[in-house]
Length: 243
Image 1 (cartoon, rainbow, N blue to C red):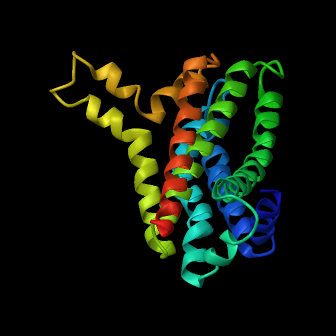
Image 2: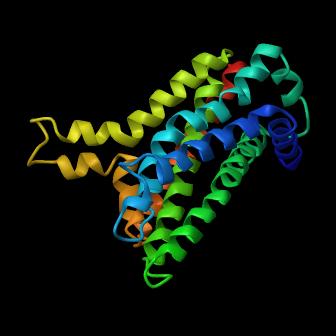
C-alpha cells in the first residue's frame, strides 16, 4: 500500500496537478475571505471564519473530483491497471494507497488556511476573541467531508476509463450526497413528516452539526460509513474484471 501511496503522491507533486489544485483553492478562498465585499472578513463586525467553511464544500465538489478522476481512469485508459494488479498487493491496498495520496493533497491545500485563523485571531478585539472550539470542529468537519468526497471520487474513477466522465460523475455524486437529501426533504411529501430523517442521509446535515463545535459520535460514524461504503463499492467495481 505504501508503494502505491508514494507513487500517487509523487505523481501529484512531480507534475502541475498538485500545485494547480492547491493554488486554485487558495486563490478562491483568498478572494472570498479578503476581496469580495459580501464575504470579506474585513467588513464583518466580529471575528469569524464562517465564510471559509461555507464556501469550501462548494469548491471541494469540483476540486476533489479533479484530484481523483485520474486515479483509476488513467490506469484503465493506459492499460497499466492489469500490470498494477499483478503486483503482490491486494485490490484494497491499491485503493487505500490512492485514497491516502488524494487526502494528502487535500491536507496540503488546507494547511495554508491556518493563516486565515491567525489573521482573524489578531484582528479580534481583544486579540484572540473568537470561538476556537467551533473553528476546530469546523476543520474536523471539513476534513471528514473531503475524505468522503475523495472516496466518492475514487469510485467514480473506477467506473470509467475516461477522466472527464469520471470527473463529471464524481462531481454529481458529491453534490447529490451533500445537498441532494436536503432538497428532497423540502418536497411536500416529506415536509412535516420525515423531513428530518431525510436530511440525516446527507453530508450537509452532519457537516453543519460538527461545524458548531460539538463532535458527536453519530456524525463521525456517518462519515466513516460513507467512506467505507464507497471504498467497498470501488473494490467491487475493480473486481468486475474477474467476473
